[in-house]
Structure formats: C-alpha cells, structure tokens
Image (cartoon, rainbow, N blue to C red):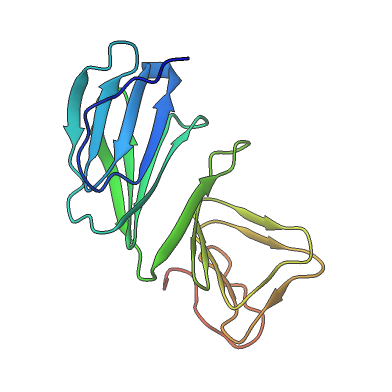
Length: 168
C-alpha cells in the first residue's frame, strides 16, 4: 500500500472525499479542492469571514458540502465550487452532522443544538435549551431546563416563555 502526498496549506483541519464529483475537499481557512484521481489542485473556495475552522461534511441527501467554523456555517455546491449560503451562529460551535434520512443539518455548541429542519424527540432528551427552525415534536421524557424549548413554527416552551415564532 502506497501513500500519496498532496500539496496543502497550513491550518488544515478536515478532509472529505465527495464521490459524485470524484474530488477531495480540504478545510483550512478556505477550502482547497483536488482531483482525487490525478491529485491535481483544482481551486480554492473562499470562506469569507472564516476564523477557527472545525469540520467539513458532505450531505448525500441534498448533495451539498457544509463547512463549520467556530461561529459560522457555509453551504457549498461541490459541482460549481460556489458558496450557496452562509449563516452566523451566536454560540461557539463544536461539531456538525446531518440526518441521512431527510438531510437536516445539526450543529452543537456547548449548551445548544441547532438544526436546519425538523427535530423529533422520542424520549430521554435533556438540554438547557433546544432551538429548531422547523417543527418540534416533543414526546415523553423530554426535559428542557430553565431556558426552555423553542420552535420557530410553534413557539412551544417548557419552563418559562423564551421566544415566540419568528423571534429567534
């Protein structure tokens, strides 16, 4: 087994292979793109305002790449190498993942979970505050601490009122 070496830059923190385009995406301050067969450098995708890069994922459900930094999330088209969308996050982010069944993207911070779609809680879930931009289905065993449980669509709260639809 032979290991090949690709050129890079300092500060690289994550790497993913995206099969539909047969390319390798490397997260540093920006994203470097390489052909996975020839190892040739293809382009750099600029992540405007990026500081403290954390994680890179390819969401096979919606065919977008998501790049997470300490306070920002970018949505990237791997076919055109263009940033489609970006959103600033008030809390310090820690990790990123997605739901393979519906494509929802989830971000964790020290005390919150942010989601791009619906969040369904079936039991045994505890948090200081859960924020969802979509519908929230709360079943048995749901516990939200003093900050509550908020849905932008429904304004559901457990504990004290925290927000109303459209105020998050």
